[in-house]
Image 1 (tube, rainbow, N blue to C red):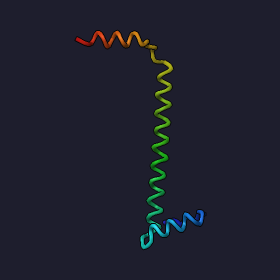
Image 2: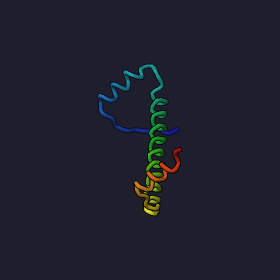
Image 3: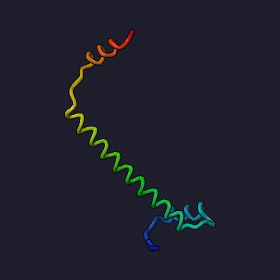
Image 4: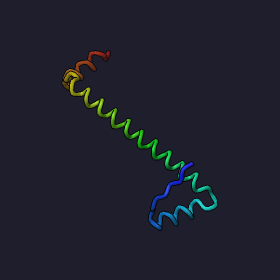
Length: 77
């Protein structure tokens, strides 16, 4: 197991200590770090997906509003 040292504002430390009094603060910090890593990975995947969608739009055929309306009307009784 590793030891991590970092600085936080005093008011954040005080609020953290008050909120998690009597609990294993190392475990809480470790869980928060895992959540932060997962959030960053989700964000990265999201940005990659958006990039793929935008790249596909560049080569997608252009469809006019009139052609969409016509297709909708043809499918209705």
